[in-house]
Image (cartoon, rainbow, N blue to C red; front, side):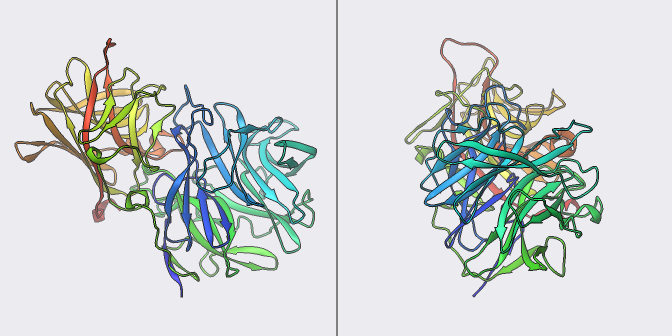
Length: 525
């Protein structure tokens, strides 16, 4: 019995995947940068069907994010399991550096972070050898002198998992497969057969991204270059190939003995990437004690057959990636694991009231700043979708406003908001707001709709029982990695703001929020 996995296995903003197998169960964690909670945890038993079982960092004490840019915060986690304990190691580049958290359950709760003294650089990973010893592998600037941008080295050092300290000698083990390599990063260490392997990315996270591998009979090296490096990349396929930026890989073995590799890649539309880096899967075989990725093909495939029985996720539909989502806030009492906020949200940001809905505080912390705005979102996970929100607009006057936002960063986003009996469309590019449309709609309950197809967006408002168009086919290519920069994909969600300081803050009441996947128009693929 086998199952077919569709690529990407985690569509949307799921970058820097790390995978861990425990018996028949697989777990993936991904980078989350300045979003809270941090590091989503996905679970599967067939590598094809995934469900979100939680987040690694769910308390502010675990994840300080104040004054953090959207593409800062949490970089490149690794998840490993050893002797009854789950370890997640990561870098908070904004606060504290490299740290480890632990739990006896994959979904958590996880411990407070153990920050690792002397562990400079980024992209740490842990490796447990057959004798129980643990090793830290990470990347940092060339200790002999930083000669050019991306002049990094991968280093290895033994790690004490009782005291969470580096011990013994540090070894500068590898600096990449190519001469003058830029950004050897995201290293993982394995012991397979007679060899230790370093699997890592090089070339940066953009068009030159690639996966390379080296091996040694000793954990500290010296490491031998694979002459077939890079063993996996799409950089040779040209800028118009529909899947690009392939790299940052991790290996996993199934109970049947088969090997697979997860990695990130992007799917641009007309050369613009709005969903960010996504998680893909490839088959791996071993020849001459070297990994060969997707043998006979050498690039990512749209689907692949896996020799495992099909797994049916047991959690609620909204916790699954790549499905339509409907949230009736009037019957909710908490936010489920797929929801995120920016940075460390304030205690009074939101509350649920049974039968009424979600009350979101209109705060003076704006989406255009680096504070903690009143914004609750999910990941955009397809090129074409329709999102709709219904809110009560009676109190949204004199600077108070609320609505829906397609958010790439504080400098690039698209808002459809209601304020003062008007529905307004505001496109923010390069830190500047432009009001594109306004529609009078003096109603108590207001429904706002954003419809996206590739790099075009149309925005609507329900008025007198029919959808009134505010803007059609708006170019939103600015909400892409290629224009806005950074490492994140777009999120979509509800927000509330106020340009006035008040003794008693206004609260916007949201009744429902929905996200429906659509079929892309052919010309936008």
